[in-house]
Amino acid sequence: MSDLKKYVKKRKTKDKAYAEHYESGYDGFKLGIMLRQARVNAGLTQEELAQKLNTKKSAISRIENHAEDIRLSTLEKVAEALGKTLKLSIN
Image 1 (cartoon, rainbow, N blue to C red):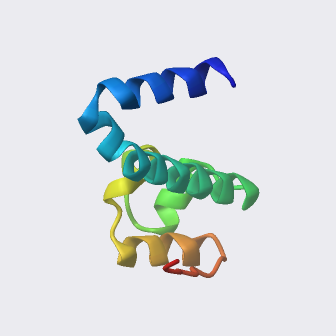
Image 2 (spheres, rainbow, N blue to C red):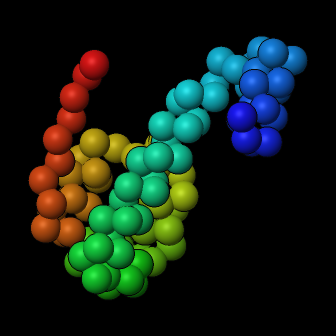
């Protein structure tokens, strides 16, 4: 087990609030990473994507770093600007 996994396991046992919010925070983090990777794979900078979406670079940065707060409509616009389609599933 990695040091990070040990830390998370220990922290979850000691901090109930951390344990309760860990998964949702991690999901937001994963979404931001996925969006960033899609942008990079599309060969776009944050500035270029911002121009396509008629917004500012700081908004793209905020989306990539705090994706847990992103609206579905915004997510659809980002996907379209990247030439991607958005697929949503509930498991």
